[in-house]
Length: 451
Image 1: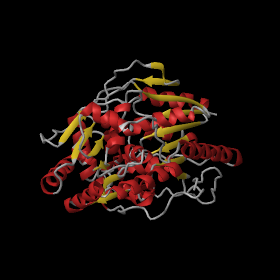
Image 2: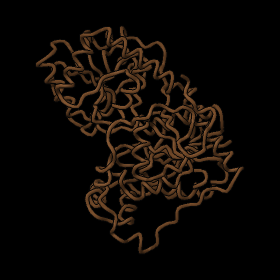
Image 3: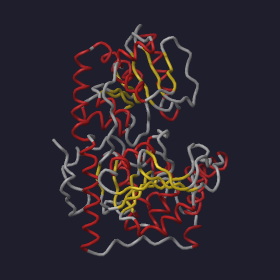
């Protein structure tokens, strides 16, 4: 079997959520099937500037074929199109122009997909909202397996997003909450899908002693790992933590790992370590009392899984359905929806050592059951085998027809933000998979969890 993995940017040094997710999956599946990655020449997700050479490369032993981006992103143009489709009545053509403006627009990549589709058995697309996913799924419908990485943001409410969710041959969801959102917005329950998430590359030998010797931090601390950005809830985190430091605890620190997009407060108990190596990151997790995830929107938090694999509890923003649902299912952390809840939860974690240990142990068990690579790889391979059998046994599904010239231009689409605001909220009620894809009559052996 030959598999293509298509993602907006790719490289050993690119650590964005969906991009890292794609690399992990490509590298792990390459142990079972032939894998080729198709991507752009961009390295930076803000500009999409062509910084890498087009053509064939290799990353960690996996062949990578790169295609140029036609133009860099114009932030002002993208802002104008975003306001039009998210806040106003608009047309499908407006949505397509929004997607072109968002980037990375690579017609050469889509042309390759059309011409070379027959050389791949299946094509795995990452991140529903981008040019390559929309046009690639349309061009390779019978082979297209989508990893949507969808969050509760306005792009989810676009008509073209729903078409992509209905157009894929199968979907690999990150969480029950993501699946519930997509089902609600696209009515794509007939499309085979499974909640799978992603494993994590946890290195052995992480050392809290090495972390403390390197940084000089001896006090207890709460750790944040990721982009330091308002959209990730960091402004609220700074507010809550500085109040906690003034009102509750004289010892607790906040340690930050990641690239800042916003200013970090100058506070004696807030420490920014900047960009760190993988060894330094895992040493920091091992030394932390808890990992904090303040984001309002996630499809899956990989660093949360890493913390659980290392028996570290998490403290998450309860207004993020995915994070709250994961914490409830794992019983491996606490969540907050206000400063008062943040302060009480952090105080419990700081002062109750037995609670920290119990939550951390639960996290490790949950990780082993659902995010060990043997489980994740098994679900991917089971889905591909299921689709292979379906191809042999009957006709392939038909492609949803494109709207005509006039239909594309009619401004009858409601504001995308209004669509998303009406979607169901809260953690998904259903527990983890029990061995069936969520489509009628599609039970698949090998997809069951390992409980």
